[in-house]
Every structure is written in structure tokens, then in C-alpha cells.
Length: 246
Picture (cartoon, rainbow, N blue to C red):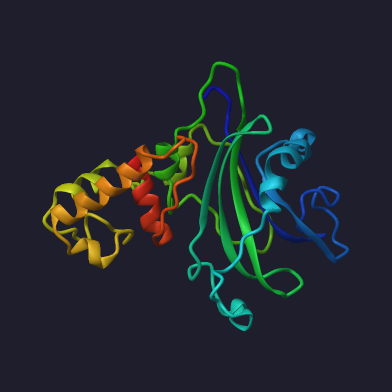
């Protein structure tokens, strides 16, 4: 893409931390609500980008798994709840990729909140969006910001979404897929992020290839092709299987 890629962080804010609360300069205290926390976009266009591309996704919400008791939500940390990686190739005139992460409490100290990191750029006629494979390679990328913090963020534009990898090997890539379908056993070095469950790490090549075959069959036999495919798996393994299918 020829245009820089903008970044936006959004979460539950106070008047002092929300970008649109007098540009984040309102130190009067009090709760502002879910809104932009920081971003690389100039203030002149920030609010229109946010309202059109970020806010509708942010307001869909993000919660702890349904089997977590309400009394336990405040004890969960960002590392206890799988993040949600999402991608909208065409959304109100933008390409939008992002991640929602769990936050134990909002600024009112209520249990169960979330923090969003969005990367986006306007759609341009003749230019293609990022591919689903490019986005899946960013599962657990170190460049995703997962938590709020005191003070201000220094948010810069990106020239490529691969910058979110910060030079590290992707958690999901062709080499991991190749090992999954050919290796006698999946070793820690093959899967350093532990995306593949133990039962499949130690299963045979024949069993793993049968799993991929079933997945591809379900993907290709959808009638009509636009029909949704329900994949039941842990989030990190599901991301890997989607990569395999695509």
C-alpha cells in the first residue's frame, strides 16, 4: 500500500486520557467512556477516522469466556483471556485490522473491560487490501499493544503491517504448517508460541494430515460458498487451522 498505515488505541477512558476530551488535555477527572486513547492520526482528521472505522468495532465489545463467573472477572489478567484478532478488508471505506485484549477493570473499577489496538488505512481504488494470510501471521505479534498505562503513548505510523512483528518470526507461518503435515512430532522449537495442542503435537503425521483434509473438505464443500464454516478449537489453534485452510 502506498499510504502510511495509521494506528489507534482505544479503551475505557477518563476525561484526562481520552483523545477527544479537549484533545486529552481535560484534567478535570471523571469518566469519559469507551473512546480513542491515542493514535498516530493528526487531530484534524482523527475523529472522523475514529467514528467511521474504529468506534463501530470497538462498541461491539469483548468479554471474558462465558464460563467465567462474574465474581472472577476482576481476577483475570490480559494473559488469562485469549485476544481477539480481527480483520475487515472493506469497512466504511477503510481496511481495518486489529486486536482486542482483556482488561480486568474499567476506569470505574467495574470488572471486565477491554483494550483495542487498531491499524487502518483508507481504501484506494486499484489497491488491494492485506490478505487474510498476512493478517493471520500477526497472531501474538509483539507489536500489538494490549494494555493501557499511565501517561501518554507515543504512537507512530506504519509503512507495513509486518512492522508489528518487530523483526521476530511469526507465530503462524509456512514453516510451522510444513512441520505440522510432515514432522513425526512437533517440537517446542517448531512452535515456540505453543499454538498446537499437545494431543496434536504427539499425534502421527497421518492423523494430522487427516485433520487438515477434513478442514479443507468442509471449507470447499460449503453450499453456497458464502455459508459460514464453524470451527471448534482453542483460539490460537483455530488461527493456525484457518491459515492452513487458506
